Image (tube, rainbow, N blue to C red; front, side, top):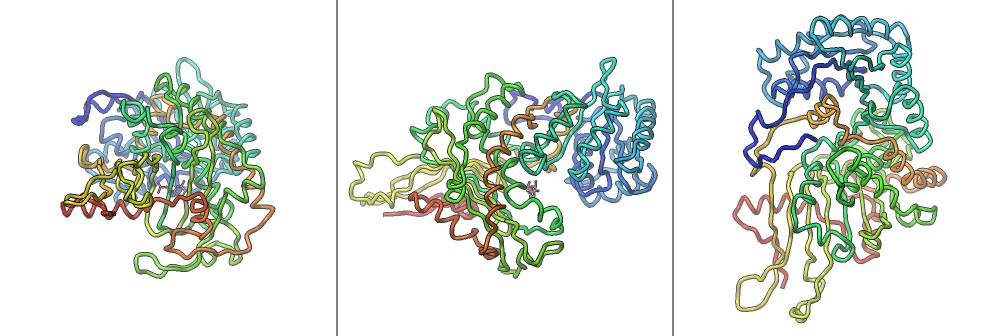
Length: 532
Ligand code: BG6
């Protein structure tokens, strides 16, 4: 996270200096991530002058084609996946830096060829021997590629040249496998050479959580158990499992979203102020939160964790199939596509404040948000208004799709009778900063090249995350679900997810309210509803 104090008028020059010369090697160059995210992100960085002139990309995958074929294919794909118009002149410059070598990731021969190609790229593009290896492969190859890179001495740092390895998610599929993977990686690389990526940290609004909390004086004093009733994190997706049935059948919603994306949101929301924005300081505070999460024993899992799987249903007026009939999914699958949890963070700031989280596929809308629900004030002045009708203050951090922050509070509805209405103060990112189309990978790739690991996960963070979810994995495995599918596509998940909050006198925040509020704002109305 490079820092800049210039506020709203951020010009291109102030965005940052170009990254140092280097070569980026992409393992899995034939895959979806490369064409949809990595190449468009690198192209955006090049357009924004954040890539050095001395830069090369080497694609590696099983498919047998030449560097020229790779350039041609990438040229076709960028037109489909670029986030803004592809300018011929800048693309022509970019494409010259692409190289390719085919091979089997397990075969030491590949790494010899790769070594030669790195030397060639270094000579032709003057990359100074610095190298970023990006593992955009199936996770089974992570330890294999790292081991082979080490054996071929491609990760050796000599004469001031740096070598870093970016590892995609999923990082392990449970605690043991994550520990084993960290161990294998540690045999080859120092921790500061490893960049465990979580694309949620590339989202501007996620990074903004820290700025919002720690660059403003008014929120931190109320950001604790004394004023906060509970916190909700929702990551709702309208999409189903699409063509990823193979992967998803072994992952499920819990592994796919919780120990990574959702825990990033929770740690940034709950952590203590770090002593600086230095990676170590930020990671230390995030890790403390993960360690403070109350362990879930089997009874607690039964009580605090809900799973669901979507059946057929309707979204946006269109009929959609159930999970069990999606491609590459077992017709009797017991994989969960929805999870809701109630967690407690046992520390002085948060003890007694539940953190509810939920995520699912085929929900009614796409929305990622964090809701801080404050305690009600003493309503002595409003004795004649029943308490249920007075909404508690709520701060909603909207991560996507309508990036922004809103605060709801009670106001007097104009008129001779005292009536209260819930109103919203809304900040929309786009109103102040415009929108810069991006893939979400730009900052992350740039940070790797700059050697800033703040937005990446440290080994102990990953293990602490798996430690929290492991008891759920174990219990759910031991007790396969008998009621799947238990929610219709287009609904807000199984009834038990609502029950999880209702039994404590709470409700999930209505994510669809945001869209309604934006519509109202456009129509010049700010009052969401009035409750006499
Ligand atoms: C990925 C998961 O990591 O994140 C997907 O594997 C999920 O299942 C995706 O759809 C969600 O990302 P985003 O950025 O669309 O919220």
